[in-house]
Structures are given as structure tokens and as C-alpha cells.
Amino acid sequence: MGCRVELPRLQPLYETYRYRGFEIVAVDGKRDTERARKFIEQKGLTYTLLENGEGDAEVASRLFGIRAYPSSFLVDREGRVLFFHEGFEEGDEVELAQHVEELL
Amino acid sequence: MLPLLRRLSLALLLVGFAAACARGGSEPPAANGDPWAALRDAYTDAASAAERADLAERFLADHPDHERATSALAMAVYPLKDELRDLPRARALAEGVLARATDPEDRFEVRMMLWELSLEEGAPGDLREVAGELTPTRALTYGELWELVDAAARAEQWVLVEEWSRAALDLATPDAWRAENPDSKLTEEQVSARATSRRAFALAHLAWAAFNLGRTEEAEATFAEAEAITPRNFVGVAQTPVDRFRGRAALRQGDLDRAESLLATDAVMGGDEQALAELRQIWAERNGSEEGFEAYLWSTRQRLARPVADFALADYEGGTFDLASTRGKVVMLAFWFPT
Image (cartoon, rainbow over all chains, first blue to last red; front, top):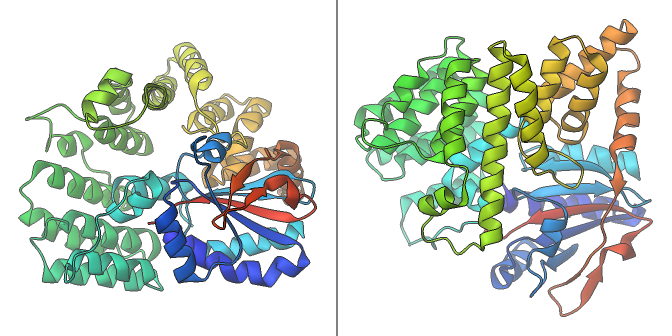
């Protein structure tokens, strides 16, 4: 399982917690703009989605040492990275929601 | 949940379309009426492991000679083995595919799956025999060696771990990488990074094999060599099992402090279940019980946390987004790509 599963499953999480100060920032590691646009529109994703930087290719994924997609980090209100998760399986969004609750 | 590395390596090695996401490749557009494309789509949208196993099993029954039969088998075997715990059904499917398979690479993959089942059943089969599907005709590729090294290490067959790690080390050069990927457009720097990753993986396993074969001094030197070149992500999680192997070695030598510091990152940040169990064991040995372990885990997480690196990137509406603007909020930073 992977990205196709993960991104749509984040949308309800975002809608549940955004008013309490939760943000999702998803960076497209592939810079496949057309495909990404289509996917975002099709799945109705409304959180922040970013391209990985034209010209300075893969800046962000390099900065974070990404070896596989999807990979995610959870950052607290002080800007500290407290959780890291690689891959996305069914049910992972439940665990993620618990961690978000812990940090909010 | 499965150990992370296992889940990841299966996605990388076996399930072709999942690998398209994990690895950065992309599948050709689905032709109308292509049963493989239909399986892929249905599989991604399936609600449960049982449904996924059924889909893949039906595909195999309807298209036993399809060129993607081995991939479809993996898509049935892993939910059956890891989630549904139905080993006999997985074995029957794999044996059915093996009976029809003639291509050596397919036979190797199917026999690796059967071997995984045998390990699960508590009676691991002979890995050298599995490798023998390929070795009469050609040398093993790095990917195949990776699978074999990882499998042999899990089955604690140290002589095999050593033999195949050495072979993997021979392929841990930019030239060897290029020879296996002649059409790649990667830059020299990217190829060199891949060669280093290979080297780090091979050295970590060589060291762990040496330790288990009683050559502790050699093991320590090789561990140090592996550690020095192992790529790490932003929160320090190593791309190889070097910290876990080293931590486990320290644990066996009774050095709890060293074991704790080596295992902490993989256990807490990397989510490795075995490392977490070992950390719990260390805590219990020191404190006489597991009481307080959860609080200890949380404080360890706080200690390992580091400030996020800010960046600014383009959004899809022509604007720029600065991560620093989210400070004061809880942020999930996800790296993905569209498949």
C-alpha cells in the first residue's frame, strides 16, 4: 500500500483537527505536476500540497533523508520533529490521530 | 502491525505496483480490459486483507499463465501470511504457481515466498536451494542478494549471511550499480549514494554475522565501518539495521547502557518492534518491572526530537508556502508522490 491510500485518508483527519491547530503539508517527491494536480482534484484534498521545487530538485526530500514514499513526520507546536513514519498501511491513520491528539 | 522494514521491503521487492509508489517508478497507463490493471485498481481500493487476498487469488485462478502471476501471488501470500495467518492457503497458492512457473526469476521469487512461509511455520527451508534456481545460469543481482542476506539473517544462518554479504559488497560500487541499471539517468552523485547504501547494508550484515560466529573484535571494527557510511534520515533513523544489530550485540554482552543508546532511535523514532521490545527488556532489567516504561519512552522521544528544517516550496496555485509559517501549529509533513 502507499501514497494512493495515504493521501485521501489524511483528508478526514485534517477536517477533524484543523480547527484545533493542526496542519498537513504534503510534498510531492516526484514533481510530476500534472499527475499530482489530477490526483488532488479527483480526491478532493484541501490541505497544503506542495511541489518539490523546480530547479532545486528534491530539496525537501533530500533535507529530510527520504528513502521511500510515503514518509511522514509529525512536528509539535514548537517546531520539533517528534514522530516519523514510513509506508502507509490500513489503520495507520488511527495511530496518527492518537499522536496528533497527544500533541494538540 | 508488521515490523516496518519487512513491510517496506515486501513493498519494494515484490508487489510491483506498490513499488511504483515506494520507489519512484510509474506503471504504464492501464489498457482497457487488462485484467492486471483491473486487479491493481481493485486491490488498492479493497477494504480489508481478506478482500485483497480473495482478489489476488481469483486473478490467479482466472489467469494462471499471466506474466504477472508471480506479482499476483505476492499480493495474495502476504495478506494471508501476515494479516490473516492462513499459512496453508498461502502455501497451496504458491505451490500451484510454482508448478507452472518456468522462468528462473519467477521460480526464485515464488520459492522465496514459500521459504518465508516455512520460516513462519518454524522450519525454515534451505535458502541455498532457493538461490539455486538462479545460480546455475548467472550471478545473483544485488537485489536478489539483498533478499537472501535479509532472509538468512532472520533465520540466523550466519555462514550464508556472510557469504552473500560478501557477494553484495562486491556489487556495492558505482560501476556495478551502472552495470545493473544501464539505462538509468541518475547523476554520478546519485549513483555513488546508491553504491554507498549497498556498502552500508553489506557491512552491517557482515559485522552481525561475524559477531554471531564468535569473531567479536572483527565484528566491532566492521560495525564501525558500516556505521560511518550508513545514511540516516532527519530524525537519525539509519537506512540499514546497523544500530539494531550493534545494540543487540551489546545487549548479549550485558552492556545495557550501550545497548540502550544504540537501540533508542530505531525503537522510538523508527518504530521497530523488536528494538522496542529490547528497550523494554533493558528497562525491566534495570527497574525490576515495566512500570514507568511508557513515561521513559516519551522522555526519550523528547530527547531525540530535533527542530524541523524549514523550507519554502511552490504550491499548485502559483504561490509559495513557507513551512516556518506553521510554527505554533501541530504539523504533519508528508512526502508522497502521485501514482
